[in-house]
Length: 148
Image (spheres, rainbow, N blue to C red):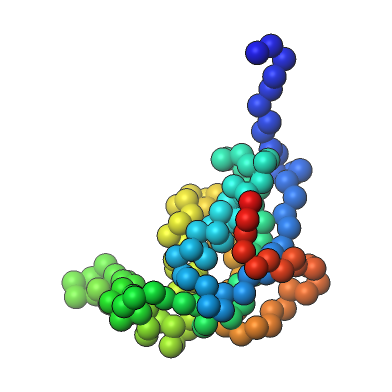
């Protein structure tokens, strides 16, 4: 094909929109997949793997996220200090009870690339326990579910 070119997005020209997602009653894994997709920018036709073309995501009602089956009691989050005997674990139920934002943040972090680019994508995730958020000035778009 003569004359066709591949589009490559540039950091300076990338547009970042803001979206609000209500986590009330949504399944954790399915919600996290959609959030990670938006943070990476894979929902846009201008997606470029080495450029941060993703959008900002605000998650409200993080404490009301749904877990199916026995995940709340059987699934665990592990932390290791690096010292002998330094492995600590908490069940999802304990994490939701103490700080529900941490669960969504941890699951979404696991779906993003572990690079500088992934860290900048993760910085665009804002999770709040209640129904309100302080980002009204950015005029975020409320989204029920992403149907791209």
